[in-house]
Length: 113
Image (cartoon, rainbow, N blue to C red; front, side, top):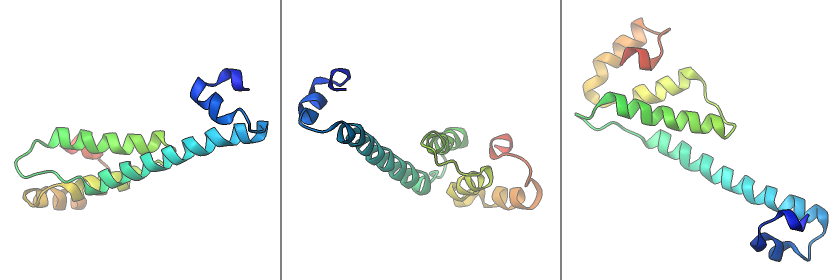
C-alpha cells in the first residue's frame, strides 16, 4: 500500500496498520471537501451584484457556485438557485424580479436575462 503513495504520505504512514492507512486519506479529503462546500455556500449566499454591473457575468458567477456544489455532491434545486440569483440583484431590478415571479415561473433565470 505504501508504494502507491507520494513520499510525504509514505513517511507519515509507514508505522500505521493497513486499515488506518486506508482511512486516514479518506478523512483528510472529506475535511477538504467539507471546507470547499462551506466556502462555496458562503460565496453563493453573499454574492450580490453591484449597481450598474453587467448581469450576465454575475449570473454566470453564481451559476458556477451552483455547479460547484453539484460536483461536491450537494446539488441545489433549480428553483432555489433562481431564488438566490434573483435575491442577489440590486434594488434597480426589483421590477424585473416582481415580473419574473408573477409571470415567468417556468422560465430559467438565464433565459430571462
